[in-house]
Amino acid sequence: MKNYVHKIIEIFTASEHSEEVTREVHQWLIDEENAQEKEAALNTLWKETEGKVEASVWDSLAEVYGKLETAPRETKPRYSLRIGRYAAAVAILVVAVSGTFLFTKNMYSAVAMIENYTPAGDMNTIQLPDGSEVRTNSRTVLLYPETFKGDTRTVYLVGEANFKVKKNPDQPFIVKSTAMSVTALGTEFNVTAYSESDQTVATLIDGKIKVDCNNGQKSYILHPGQQVAYHRATSESLFAEVDIEDAIAWQKGMFVFRGATMKEILSTLERRYAITFQYKANLFNDDKFNFRFREHSTIEEIMEVIQEVVGGFEYEVDGEVCNVKSTVKNK
Image 1: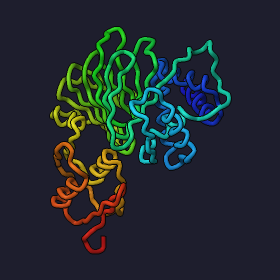
Image 2: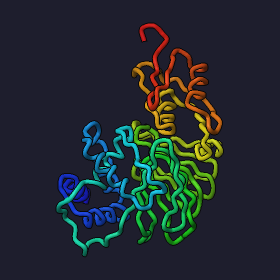
Image 3: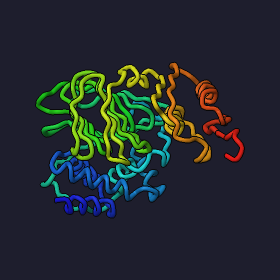
Image 4: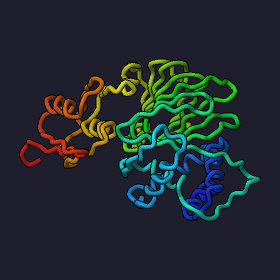
């Protein structure tokens, strides 16, 4: 079965296909049958696409999002390779264009999928077909079926989102992201799965969830205020007790950084302020910092505080670009 799944994805990404076939592939992707093989194949594609994504793929993805009838606004998303490797794999799967493929109507019923993209600087609230509510953070892709069918309600996430799940014991709700799957019956939880970050994080706000890491190789049952962080580089997971208010602060427009490096902090600020930081790779080390910024803070206010605490750099905001330079000689 493993070779079969890989072969299907290989043929799909190498061929042209029709909109009808795209719907069939979407349905196949969300079916729970052979889920582990599909996830492994997707991870392989994710690794293979690193550094090899052509502009045409992102143009096609932009075209898909531009046609979304369900988007809460008509603002055209801004696209960047910063969306990352996993999103590149998803993009190839959902937007590879026109032609033939080895699926027939008899094998899978056609279920339309909705791709919802939240641009940099924005947050969205999405009502799912089952009545569940999702709050998505900046630069987040949420992929879900037009109608939930079968034994589960499965959605796919690249980015960060808070889920308030409509209770349905007969149809568990599953959020799938890179190397992590979160299952809930009726609850509220937060998942952070940005492709540029090494960590995938699940935090329980209310109720109970099951978190499977690395294709189920390690599983956790979480209670409110508990969190699992999976590190993709090391394949290690960390369980911790956390402050719930910190976990959902982003929904209020606040920033809370706990043990974050400067690279992680700037990456978060880029998403939320639709800005690009330009700096030398060796400007910041891996020291970790704690910051809390109030709602509606400007990028200048935030950078002033960071500059005061971290030191060793100066910055200048010029439109959508922030240039950061070292004030230390030879750096």
